[in-house]
Image (cartoon, rainbow, N blue to C red):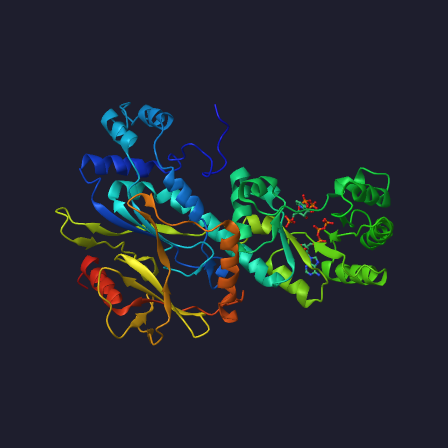
Length: 495
Ligand SMILES: Nc1ncnc2c1ncn2[C@@H]1O[C@H](COP(=O)(O)OP(=O)(O)OP(=O)(O)O)[C@@H](O)[C@H]1O
Ligand SMILES: O=P(O)(O)OC[C@H]1O[C@H](OP(=O)(O)OP(=O)(O)O)[C@H](O)[C@@H]1O
Ligand SMILES: O=C(O)c1cccnc1
């Protein structure tokens, strides 16, 4: 028996990474003969995480891999065949299991590239294909995209606080939500802007640079601190960063300097020191002064200890001389937002005789939660510097009017005419009827794209406190269509 797979990337079959109800609905669709009715689903979130102004789309490569491997193995089918309803009868009859055995992935998928900045209500993935198949994708797509997007966004915020030139290292594995949570978080954190990870498996699987220092236990295992530092320098003469706060931090810096002198005499340079407790602003300033005075201006100062974007911002304002930020717990657990609330909603279904689309709508008491019908595309309008100005959601099945206006989906009185003719479409084709037609970028390319994307946003949208709202609107005809559909579906109760 193979050990439990850690990630969709290398597992033989992960098609049971789903909620039971997807399979019960699939059986029901099959029984009704509805399995091949063409359907369109959109995956989107409603609000950017961390009360921020944007999110960084992530998870597509993992989702693509999962979809490409979508099939039910004999093990999967054996398990599904063993499930029983409350009367002890099989939940799924043999003929349906045979249908699943022969099921081939034939959906068409459009998606926003990883690393692209995205906003509430914008489809990150659009799936078009047989109803039963498109339904079966829901849970896995959400699991992958929600977590990856959440962590990539957190990492982008931490990068924003650290600035473009400081190093950011991800140290979170020990605090992650399990092995797969740690592995996925390291991937997304790198995509979102950290420089390296301490997670060796993530280095091996995803080619992320691996970096690190040493723990307190190293110092504690020797008779004194200078002996411990000298021993570490012997093991890694050109790659040593000494943790200086085991006993007395500034005394630790002095010990590091004396070992660094010996290293230099032997033709090597101390890479850095790490501070992991105490007042990081004060200690880093003192440490910088000691290192500079001693002739080690290039020795880096790493800080760790429950860091996150607001603390990094504050430390910088306090004049901290930290140039490398080790960030663990708060990054990989996405503090202070446990999950991104991405959803997957049916937006269109071909009618029974396959002659036209029926556009579908999920009503809600709150307008924010009422879905958007249509087969949607997101068009991003750019200013003359190529920076995003406004996004327009429109229905691709209808012609666009000459004069374009976008309307806030939450407040129809807020409208903006579109004057710009410079735009790009965010959803790009990934699969055509089950066949992949897009070559995915490497993780490093997606990371570079993310950095450009975040930098292209106005600082007022990137700030952490009460960010400005980036304009995302429904194209006027789509807005009218949605409003009419809401009126049609909503019960009109007399007063
Ligand atoms: N100058 C500073 N301004 C704001 N917060 C700081 C500053 N220096 C450190 N912190 C943060 O304050 C928190 C508590 O720091 P403290 O040194 O008390 O940590 P600790 O975990 O109790 O130390 P130890 O690891 O020795 O137990 C940490 O999140 C740390 O990053
Ligand atoms: O604080 P984080 O952002 O999670 O960064 C990773 C932390 O992990 C290590 O110590 P560990 O937490 O194991 O022990 P400590 O907190 O007692 O130093 C390291 O020294 C960092 O403090
Ligand atoms: O390499 C480090 O300094 C490190 C690694 C994991 C957690 N904390 C620190």
